[in-house]
Image (cartoon, rainbow, N blue to C red; front, side):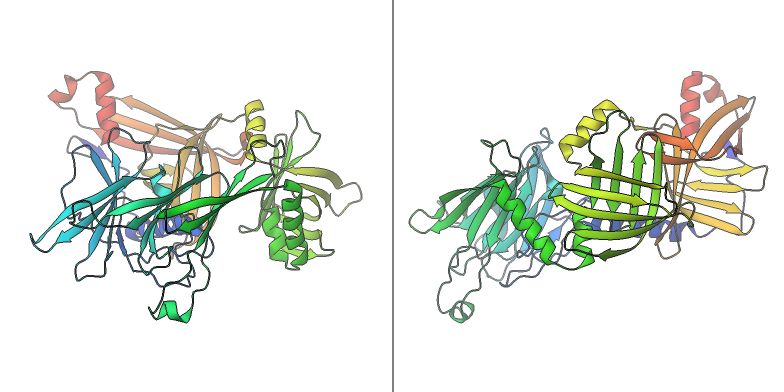
Length: 537
């Protein structure tokens, strides 16, 4: 706030406030953990790879696709320093410092995109050192099929088996399909600098696997070449009505053509795929395998108008039941395997721990389960057949009844006080809730459903997630002379698939007072601009 205004509440000195630095550091750690939880940044690899240092100009969610046996090159985040100037129309996405030809100087791989085409294909360029001129220059570049910069993985791997490193680009396009682009080092047409040629491009809506077979001791000692890796691509069979039917395409390296060639196309019936997947699940006696199979939403078959959804979240140890306007959340306490296709799970109600439910789950098919939900009383039980809620079914349900979520223009900052002695200090995106005998701190956000919602996520001093709180929020501003009154009213609530609902009639009213100092320049402004200026301050 500048010298024209004074916020009394912000000047309030409260010794119980925790350090803003600690809360911000904790929130940053939480965000980093959420990002890294969905990533395989370190995977096991049987072949040695050249270590590359990747330089990232912005913070991205690195959800890196790749086969289970493939390893992304080890990375080190440094400052963004491309060794050559870029075109004015180019946007630099990433820099990888590595050694592509095993000489004494590092090279660079740049990931680029056209500034005017934010959804366009990503391009890679190689920057090589010229010892004669003692300078770096761009010697080669090529487009890839990838468009999603957050899903792009670049590694160096001897795919062909001739002891040279290919540039392996895995990514995703705008249709959500996986992409693979392979580039092999070849002599430059000019005779100067590193040059590469494309040896394979694949786009598949299923998966793309590089079969990294074990190579001989002679290969590892550099005495002879090794066998080339075979590459498989799996896509849905568009000629079949069964969504489980797949097409498997096999690619082999051909030295004569200096590229990978499609050599075999196989149709894989969905029934066989389903049977194999279920066989693997039933033969695995672990509870974890069964819980992983259940993970996600399941829709009660045969319902219309009052849909019921079971949501299994094994990682969070939660089971949620959505029925009409009612949401029940159960703490997933323990599970037991009975038969190979059956699981018994126990859950305690999150709000009332004395309410315990037993979930008897039987797998009927890959996308169908029978579930009995049993309570302590004879009448407290239900049974139904549930279908895996695919993306298509989710869209169908959402088209029937969709809760719109919009951003909220309200900005909460500073100290708010209630008549009951409760204080909330907002320092976006952190908050601290203080009342007698209790301090609750963490991060907050405001969303708009059918009503404005204030969502509080608690964190401890180590950055670990604790409890959450949801409130239906009402916000008002009123100005009288030089006094600006802000009123924040909170009602405890609960989020569900149908929006937010109050869980109590309790209303907690908080107030903040700001004293404004008038200046002639302010009086000359339109009233709307004055309010905007005060909000920014």
